[in-house]
Image 1: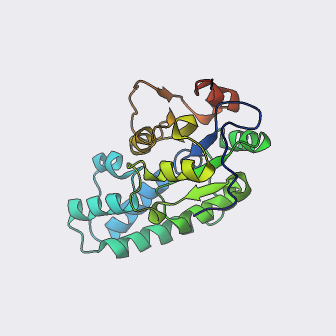
Image 2: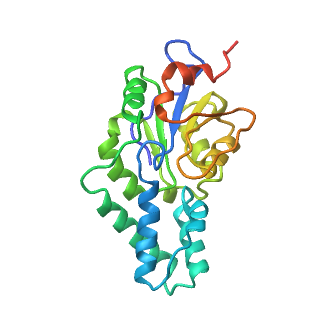
Length: 233
């Protein structure tokens, strides 16, 4: 679950109150949320079922176990959760075999965080096998830590993945900026006590106290993220 982990910190080396940046993967850093829906529709078509477009907002952005269970129950398809999960992961890996499309601004932001030695973690509901494949495109050296959905007892929308990431990085959740693209991820980060930047990819994310909504990662840089965290006394 972890790679190189820095020692606990009270604040970043240059004195700023922002202690870590925690980022979601699908739909936030990589343009893959649509891939999951397309693959789900493809598999269920092969099983003799057509997915209702209205279900898209229910399944996209959530943990695979929840999404897959919902689709099995909604369609009545003759397939088990374990078998469907394997099929989904295999089809997704095949889809991104050559190159993973990055979201606008992702490359620049990751490079800036790395250049300033900001502790950074990738926190995803996707399984480890998928995360490791995507990291080849993102650059695994840019993340001190990655947390996968199949490595935690409770994944998003529960706060556990973000609490684990913050604790492992030695950061306080309230001093962490989280970047998410779905309501499920936003709920997890806010439940953990993190400051959330929402970059909606599928479905709307309503405004709320303490929540910042931007159009794309092109609107996000280190100065912006630091401005979200109250100065330390």
